[in-house]
Amino acid sequence: EREGMVVMDDPTSILRCCNKVYLAELLQQAGVPTPKTHFLFRDQEDALEAFIQQTEYPVVLKIPDGSFSLGVTKAETEQALREKLADFFKQSYLVLAQEFFYTEFDWRIGILNQRPLFACQYFMSKGHWQIYNHSGGKTHAGKFATMPTHQVPPKVLRASLKATKLIGDGLYGVDIKQQGDRIAVIEVNDNPNIDAGVEDDYLQEDLYRQIMEVFLQRMERKRLGV
Image (cartoon, rainbow, N blue to C red; front, side):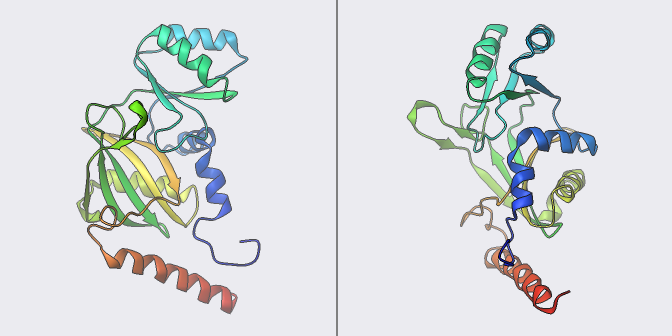
């Protein structure tokens, strides 16, 4: 970008998406539905103790820059919470604590240029509460289902678009949980993975064609100085 090139995964989007603390605050302030979230600081002992005493279990903990289910854990009891917080505070000054919101799958809505591009359901790994299960030395992933965006519940699409408009106009993957009428945006991913046979399962080659068309349009506008 500094050299004047057209980039889809732009530095501003990277900065906004990769810090879970910034992203959580941004979504909350804009009124985007999210899980109940608390920010826990290593040196605020009184606030930490109050949270531990008042929280409902289980509770999910995240370090600010985790990804692919790494840096994310679940505490079922007060003792487990204390132990996991102590471990996370060795890595980070700040830890996110979120309500446990279990669903059989997470929505992944691909947004390109502030328009829906693809829609997937990522199912939880077998016998696990996350899509990716890193226990046992191997990583296991759940199944998936890909569908046209017009089959996605409208409120899921609206939340995805509202969230990504806060980030920019690039290519994003919005993770959303749905339980009955309630939805919650978990995070917005810059540079989302698009794997052959998964995210492109419905659009096939047209998915890549749409991305390249946006690249071409932006290159033409830059050339013309528009």
